[in-house]
Structure formats: C-alpha cells, structure tokens
Length: 75
Image (cartoon, rainbow, N blue to C red; front, side):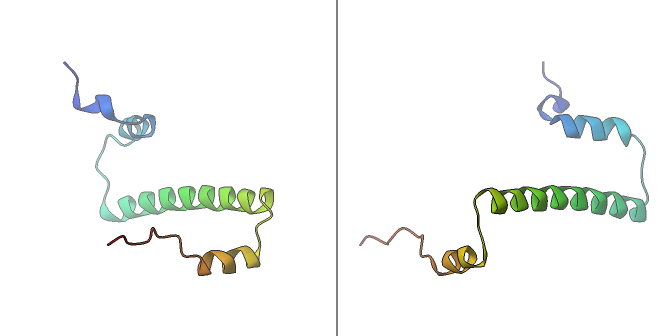
C-alpha cells in the first residue's frame, strides 16, 4: 500500500523534514517569500542565458509582441 507522501517531490520531502513544527504567520510568509525569490532568481538567470545564447534583443521582443500565433478559427 502506498502512503500519501509517495507522490511528493524530493523538495517536498525535504521541506517536510525541515519544517516539522508550526510556524507563526509572519514566519510562514517570510519562508514563502524566500522560496519565491529563489525560484524567480533562477528563472531570471535562465532567461538571461537564453537571451545571450540565442542573441535575442529588443527587436526580438518587438517581433514577438506583434506575432499572431493563434491557430485560425475554422468554420
């Protein structure tokens, strides 16, 4: 029989081990902000890397803004 924690990610398992106690609301919000900052920083770093490796620039952004990538509606 599988337990409810079998489907958790490695990060979720680790967080459960670390935070086996109740936090007050302020602490909980601070931890959430730390996690948000961490993942936002990683996303920014990855985007910076993509921009550099693909030679994207301001013109690329303007082109994307004017693209129409939706599938045409068929009647």
